[in-house]
Image (cartoon, rainbow, N blue to C red; front, side, top):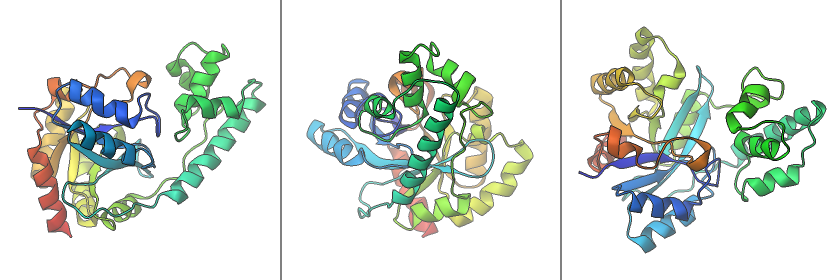
Length: 280
């Protein structure tokens, strides 16, 4: 059975392949389909869908929202096949991201780094600017040798140039997606860094607010994590999804990750749609 990857990034946010290139990569990798979930933007989705249609490959539009909760809390919103296409308005989040980038740039300049915002925009390829693009500009100037080093020295949480995001609450994020008929799935739940005993308290409420799936299969999850989140999803009747969180050269995870580590195939789409209709 071919595997379905419901979490990948393009140059519209912090990936290194264009939406069209992503479709071709996934097709060559032998996947059953791919979802594009860029951070706080859907700018690449039209190109992604067009490429999928032209190449005869299953694609899903989507987005990844950052939430204010615990650790790193991200929510995937997936456009499911056959659902009415309705625009997801994210201009407010994009304005906040632009303001954050301006503050981050100012801090780097104050720290004595000779950088140009125009060059950082060039590195982004015209997509949404994120911290990996700042890191690449810093590498070009010789301030660090890798993206990880840039984060460890300047850009990561607790470092001198770090600027926190303005994030939605879980309820706001779930409502934002559900209002336009997108299926909300909690991304890489291990990153929330919650004690096991707290999950049975949180998931029923989030499910009540619209959550329909849990990304149990993710490169950051150990086998123990996967077993834990699969059991949680089954206990609370949530769809179990898989995603490579592919970023191209910005992360060391291949587009083929789900083929080797996940049992999730296209049947999950019907499961997500059923759960979405049930919750609606």
